[in-house]
Every structure is written in structure tokens, then in C-alpha cells.
Length: 463
Image (cartoon, rainbow, N blue to C red; front, side, top):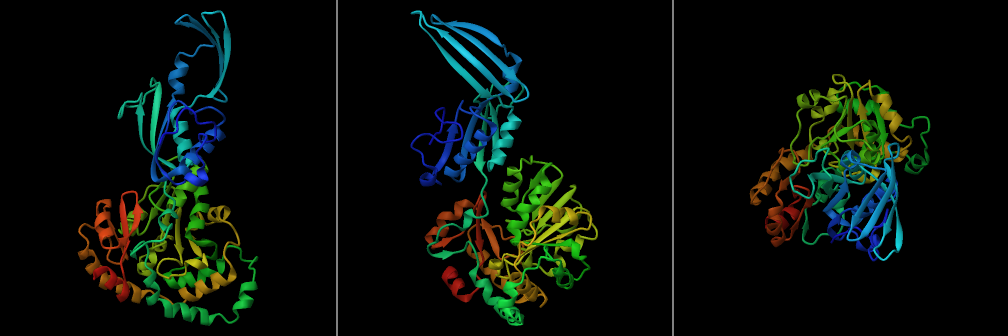
């Protein structure tokens, strides 16, 4: 499906309703239709195009390179084509990047018309920034409609090939037939006793739900419990509580306004792009464990060359507490470790996350994080769970015991760390999975499958 030169500023062609079409298109093509309207119009257009593309869909965006145009820019010019005389009167404003004026056309029969012109001339870097802010990832940039041709200052036409940046929510949409291996609902069987003990420890649930901790807006009271859990000292100011890891990561994106490199949670990259942060820079974000199931070593994190390192440990509950990057807080400046109660603890509905920061950056974390983001009841229950120590040992032992047989079942697999309850398989295995009634979570470079843990799910998968 192509969206081309008839695209109005900030909108889609007549007949395409984003609410009804999304997400339905594999690709959108926009040729010589970019720059009409304001910068806000272009950003609005790109975001609407993204809304009608399927996850992973492709946008081919062509634009005229301002550098090449301005080399030969003339305020007045005339040309004659097939008896038609064209007179160009225009002016370029370097402060706004706009070229405006009119073209007078004198026809052979003596009649004439005037075409008015007002367009924003973009440099390629500006277009790349708009694509990032709109939620795209630039896969390739070509010159003059020649695949692989490098873009130079003399390139007249520049084509961006971009794919949609996938939100963390995409893989959870829709019901699955057969055995749904996008997540592991049977994890709770190995942690339920600890959850029940935590609830039982709350003396007066209705009264706790009424409490509003305005005197402790960032949940600093969690510091002693987290200190015992990780076996290391933490100042109260080093702890910032938020509405789950996703909420915290979107807030922390404000630290990356000068640039970022993100191999972790997609919501961070989306939020940073919306703020106009360029790719590459002083902030590095990593998943630990990552989507591949591998676990970055603590020495690797310590040696990362960046002013700020944000380690997303949403899934690190599957590791032993002493193996958390939190242990590096006294030894590495600019370090923020994000934890949550979702994976492993099976309490994602509490919407509780913890940002644990090295002392030098702790104040900046609180400056960008929302205060009072966690209810007193949710925080108290989370601390009652963590206060029991390493309650996930039974779950960890179960994962180690059953993961090898699941790995052996698959025709092609990247098993990852033995403590992590998922594996990754290539997209080519999708047909093999469908034949067996199995569904995984689609990723840009493959499929993630959760390891079945309960005997019921294992029988359904292994036969």
C-alpha cells in the first residue's frame, strides 16, 4: 500500500481511516510529499502513518535534500518548456528552513496562472530525527533512488527506509489459540505461598489503602528492606519508587536528552525519541537479562563507557540477589538499576518498580520521576514479599530442572542462560510451532518462547 504525493499535511489520504485501518499495512511509500506544512505537521503525519502500519511495517520516505538545493538556489529564475514560460520568485529563510514564493506560468495561448509555494527544506539529519520521534527505526538511507548509494552533500533526493519501533505492549495483544508461550502463567505456582504470607502480614488492608504517603513521595522507606535483600548498604535517597519498570523507564528517558543508546526496553527508546533525543550519546540502556536470554556480566557493566548507565533488571528476579547490578552502585558513577515485582514475583498488577541509583545521580533520578506514583498498599505488599528474602529459589530450581527438555524439543534454538525461563527461536520455526499449536512472542529478529513450568503445560507442549 502506498501513501504518496496526495498525502495532506499531518494526515492520511482520503478514504484511509486510521482507527479502522490500524494496524493493517505492510508498507507505506511517500515520494516528494514531505515538507508541506510545519514541523509539527510532518511529525503528526509520520505518527499517523506509523499507526496504520503493522508491527515491523516499513515506511519508504523520500525527501529533497536542502544542502543540494541550496547550492544552486536562486531567488529569481526563468525557464521555457514546450512554449510555456515559468518565472520563479522565491525566498529561503535560514532561520525557519522554509522556501516560499510563487511560480508564474505563461501559456502559449496567452493565458497565465500563479502557483504559490511554501515548503520546509530538510537536511537528512532533521528527517532522521523526526522519524525517531515518531517511533520509527531507520534501517537504511539511499541516495537518488539507488539502493545502497551513499548520501552526500550533492545528493538531490534522499530515501529513508524505516521500520516501526515496536512497543512493549505489542506482543501481548490478542488471544492465542493452543498453548500460549508468550508468557508463563504457571510461575505463580512456585511463589504463591510467599505472596499469601505477604498479604497475611498486612494488619489492616482497608486502612492501608486509605494511606497517602505525601511525606515519603518516592518510597524511601523501601531502602532498609532492599538493603537486606541485596546484602549491601543503601541510602534512602538512592531509592526511587515508580509505577512499575515501564513507568520508571519512560521517566528516566528525560536523562537522555543529549543522546542515548538503548538495547533494552522499547518504551525508553520511544520516550527518548519523543523528547527529541538523538541516537548515540552519554546514556546507555541495557537489559539484564536481555531478550536473547543472555546475562551481561557485572564487570562488563562496570566498564561501559557512558556518563549514565541504566540497567533494566525487570527480569533479574530469576537471578540470585547477589548477582544484581545493584552491587555495583558503590563502585560505578552514573548507574541506575531498575527492578520490578512483575517477572518471577507474579505481582505486576501492583505496579511497583524500584530505581536504585548511585549517589552521584540519585537526585537527578528523582527530578525526572513522578512523585507519589505508587500506592501505599502496593508498596507495603511488595516490601512484605521482598522482606522474606530470596523466595524465588523454588522457581529458580524448577527452571533449571525443566528448561533442558524444552530446549531439546525445539529444532533450532538459542537457549540463553539456564536460569532464564525463556528461549529464542528464529522466525523460520513459526510454521513448526503452529503445527503443534504453540505460539510465542514475535520479536524483530525471531520469536521468544516461555519455558512451560507446570506439569500440565509441560504435557501440553512436550506430549
